[in-house]
Each structure stands twice: as structure tokens, then as C-alpha cells.
Amino acid sequence: MQETPLCLSVGHLLPFYMSDSNTTDFINPSTFILLGIPGLEAAHVWISIPFSAMYSIAVLGNFTILFIVNMEPSLHVSMYYFLCMLAVTDLILSTSILPKTLSIFWFNSREIDFSACLTQMYFIHCFSVIESGILVAMALDRYVAICHPLRHSTILTNSVVAKIGLVMVLRGCMLVLPYPFLTRRWPYCRTNIIPNTYCEHMAVVKLACTDIRVSSYYSLSAAFLVTGLDVFFIAVSYIQILRAIFSLPTKDTRLKTFGTCSSHLCAILVFYIPALFSFLTHRFGYNVALHFHVLMANAYLLVPPMVNPVIYGVRTKQIRDRLLWLFTFKGTKVFSWCSGSQTELRAELAGFWERFCLCA
Image 1 (cartoon, rainbow, N blue to C red):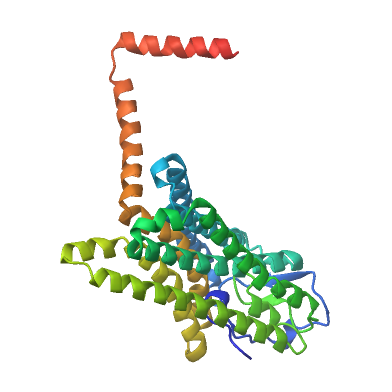
Image 2 (cartoon, rainbow, N blue to C red; image 1 turned 60 degrees about the vertical axis):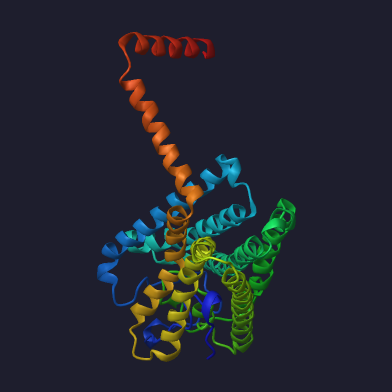
């Protein structure tokens, strides 16, 4: 059985060892059973706490990024447009798995409809590919900003940024489209139990009782194509960036210029390192417990959406300053309203009541 690495291989080829009592004679099951985290069923409620916290941070952080970029005209440039694309992708990616995962942990709701399973599978793999492509686009933006700073605004115009984003979305949608169609056509007569918290492509296909080499080879080829090309383009971009940085005259200038890439580099590491680690443990970690594989597969999908807005919020001065200004402005407004004189307070209330009556 072939294994699918990196960004398309989220759950990878999870080992499957079910007893004969779990087998049946069905051909196409109407539902699958998601086990959650095998071996840690008793701790599902406790495991749900960090999962819920990560998802809450991801949703709050990414919506904050979208709000700040939308409200601040000075951030309407290519770098922050790509950041918004990354935020939307992270929101969709984490939302594709967390609601069902939490329903397993909290309510023991393990069943998932066959069509819903295929839909979840498509969204997970599709937006993993899209996120990888957006990281490439952000590397291109950093390359143009550092190597061709005077032409940055003319090269990466709004229309060009929109076209790049559209290409990345179409690439992900078209490349992953065969997954659910191939999965649907296989007959399933072994079991309908998936040892995972979500429907990963190869974890589902492995349950088929026929030759699945087409799905396996396509998944492997797509993974190598996407990951290989994306990492190659990112590496080429940063080689050129480093050459431009080292040609600068002073150390302070070099450090300041390189600092503009630090957030993007952190996002790359957060996205690819868990995927690489998960792939290596599946490929060489034969004695690694199944629950560790499943936890790593979930971390691959949950950690980047949680960490990315924190990275850009802390390390990007424009976003950090705007966020602090919003909190400071609202706090000052509330304080001044509460500490005002009774006459001013009555005037405020009278004005509010007058506006309310007019609206009514």
C-alpha cells in the first residue's frame, strides 16, 4: 500500500486491524463509523478541551485579521490580501473537521453519512492544497517587495492578486476533484469503521474490497506534485530574497528587511513541519501508537489555523498597531462616557431617546 505524504496526506495510511466481527457483506455503506482517537476513548472529553480552545482561537484570530484588513485602507495591498486568503482558508479547513470531531468527543456521535464523508474529505484535501498555494503566493509577494521594491505596486496589482488567488483555488478544486469520485465507485465489503476523527482519503479507500491502486497512485502523485512544486518555488523565492538582503550595505538594514519575511517563514514552518513529522512517523515509526498518528493528523489541520493569526498579529506592526488602536480607542470612549458629568450623561440619554423615538 502506498502512502500519501505531506499536505494531501492528513490522516495518511492509518493501520487498520479490525476483527472479523466488524465485517459485513454490504457493498456501499450508507454511513461510516468514526472511532475518534482509538485507545483514548475514555479521555475524549478531556481531549476536547484543548481542541475547543484551539478552534476558538482560530476562529477569533482569523476573523480579527479579516476585520482589521477590511477596516484599515492602508492594509489594502497584496501582502494583506494574501493574508486574508490564508485566514479564510484556515477557517474553512478547521471548520471542516472540528464540529464532527467535537460531536464524537461530547455526544459519542460517531456515524457520518457516506455523502457527508466524501464532502468532508474533499474540503479537507482541497483547502490543504489551496493553503499550500497561498503560502507560495505570499513568498512571491515577499520576493517582489524585497527584490523589486519600486515595481511592487505595479507588478502585484489588485487584479493580479485576484487572478493568483483564483488560480490557487482552481488548482486545489480540480486536483482533488477525482478523490470523491474514485472513492464513491469502489465497493466496500470489509467494514465501515474508520479509525480516525474525520474522513481522510486513504483511510476511507483502504476499506474497499477491490484493487485501489488507482486511488493510491493518484493520491501519491498529487501529493508529490503539490508539495514538491510548492516547496521548490518557495525555496527559489527565498534564495533570491537572501541574495538581495546580503547585498544591502548595513547589518541593521539587512535585519530589518529580513524581519519583513519572519511572519511568512513562521507560517511555512507551522504548516509543513507537522505534515512532514506525521509522514515520517507513518513511514518509519512502525512502533508508534495509532492514537499518536491520529493526534498528529488532527494537529496538522488545527495548529496552523490557530497559530497563523497569532503570528501575523504579533509580528506584523501594522496589524498590531491597528489592533491596539481599536482597543485603546474603545476603552477611552467608554471611560470618558462613564466619567462625564451628570449633565452630559442626561444629554447623551436625551439624544439617544430622541433618535429612538424618531426611528420608531
